[in-house]
Each structure stands twice: as C-alpha cells, then as structure tokens.
Length: 93
Image (cartoon, rainbow, N blue to C red; front, side, top):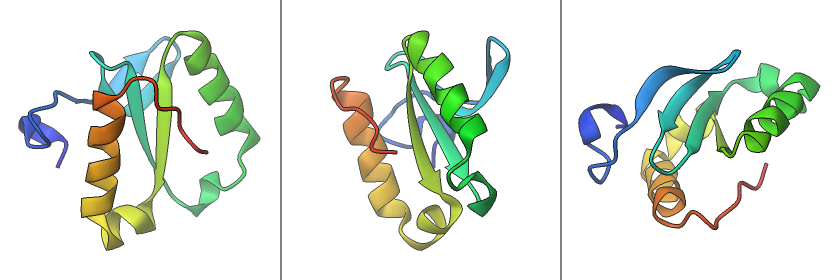
C-alpha cells in the first residue's frame, strides 16, 4: 500500500538509509518512519535506542506489528495517513 503513492498520494521510500540505520519505509516530507515488526522486536532495548537516535535527528518512528498489518490493513493505513497529515502526532510505542 505504501508503494507508488497509492496511499493518499503520499511518497514513501522503502529500505531508506538514515545515517547508520535503515528504515522500513520513510516519508521524508513528514519526517515519518514506518517500521513493520515481528515478535522479536517486543520490548527491544535495541529498537528503543534506535528510535531515540532517530528522534534526536528529527524523525518520528511509527511501529506496527506484522499481525496488525495482515489483519487490519485499513486501520494501519488510516493511522499512517493521520500521522503524515498531522506532524504534531507522536507515536504511542
């Protein structure tokens, strides 16, 4: 859904390098990173440190579980659109 501006005409880059990190998806205009995570990322201290480093560079990191994407893609897409359109929103996890 994030390819080819299919999601509300928003441009995303896939596997975008940002410093020493690689974002699953990046909307550069909104400085929003989308990460799609499996269960190995639950309570990951490494992810928390990575997110803090990216936040320090001015990015917001929005994480979704693989299961959420597979089971409720519409809700995931609606959430992404809301975050792109409202840069004051901050991720919940």
